Length: 203
Length: 203
Length: 203
Image 1 (cartoon, rainbow over the protein chains, first blue to last red):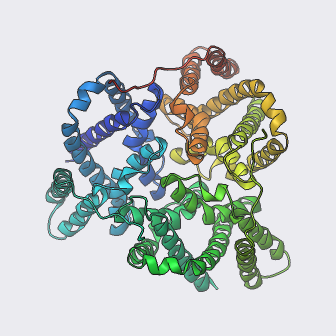
Image 2 (cartoon, rainbow over the protein chains, first blue to last red):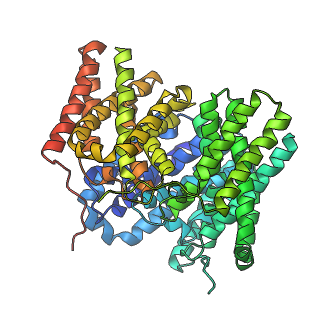
Image 3 (tube, chains in turn cyan, purple, yellow):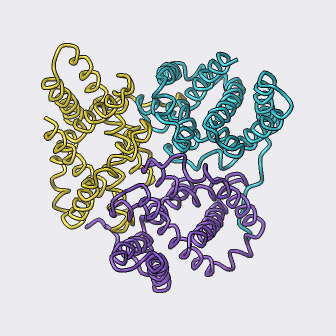
């Protein structure tokens, strides 16, 4: 089980490195800047999680394979950008799988430090979303996650599912079920363009 | 005494959660984004303080009541936004009380880790101001605190008062006096629109 | 040797405090805001390094002389801004020396925590560059480092030099050589306006 989660984690980092690299396009950002954006997008959430939990050195300092994956994928994205962008739809589904994995890992890392379920669910959400927030701040946008797409609600649903199911089932059931919930909610939100209402000014 | 400070701290988090939520209005930010903005505004300063002091896990991981206060107050703000905004003047005074509390708590947390008075005063300032800075960065503004309103000078005055008074008086006197100094300076700055000169280009 | 590095570190902080203060000009930022910008520019990189390595409290909490240098230099910059700006060319070379020092210190601090060479080189780069990134985000620009100037490549070259040379030479040789490599690469990039290609949209 742990090997599968680790493999999915590396996969999630790879997907987010691609989406972080693509965000750099057409903004006057140079090749090194692309790597920086790929890096913060892919590992920003997990870094923040490890910092607030006091789980330091952070994960990519302990295991540098994450860094090399980001280097490889962001270089590849620069070379094959046009090809990748045509497969945008695929990227969204891979991103949903990445989110599901990051959410699960965030929950499990927090649980490993003895944190309460509330914190575990938050850490799941943050692992999956904070990287994208930093990416958007660096490229001078209001973060997408604050504006649309049910990204976070999706992650919270997965987190609630994890703790509910844990009352009756073993890890062998709970882990794939949590990932399936998060993945499916995300795919549904993408397909039907679901979003929360925004907080408008009344005038 | 400690119970009063804790109650004031929760009150300060509530006030900052309201002001963070209001900052989201009319910017295309959805309901989840409102909660995120309320959260970073209310706990961002204390989180930064705990991180640089190595005081981890950070305070809201240890005591999740802060999270629930943010959830409750930001939901309430979305529902009663128009009503709250009419009471804007009240909000400024509550905010001044929140700043006074955060300043005191920042000083005391730093002192508890054995930090020097310089660091304690800085941690007081940061606890009260960093959250608002992150809120402004996320909504794509140059942070208000960099531009006006004597927010930080106010906090520094309270911090200097704390260490000066500690030479002659006991905690029972120093704590309310520190809070009174910070609160009054802030109210004076608000009433008379005091601000520092800006660093202009000579042309 | 250690005394020289410490002196160069203080010098680097002073130079970055000046450049951080100058970045505040003409943006409606008040005198306190100038100090904040000087502070994040000068110590932001080292703070981030210490946080991800778990090396807390961070360096300026342990040794407050850094804070007083920032206070002194940012005040001086506000007073002598026009005089300093006329010496802009000098500032670039002092900045290159600051970068070389920060890079070396980042590598050595990381090595002191037992980190791998990959992480050490990254920490060198981050110590020299993250402060400028935060400064640009706070003043609402896309960070310069993402866009031009071979800042990071320069730091990486120094880092690679450090570990390569360490195979054959002692610290007395490696340290000045690393600094010389970083300094010279940076000066060359400045003189010939070298930069990486940007990641453009094909249309």
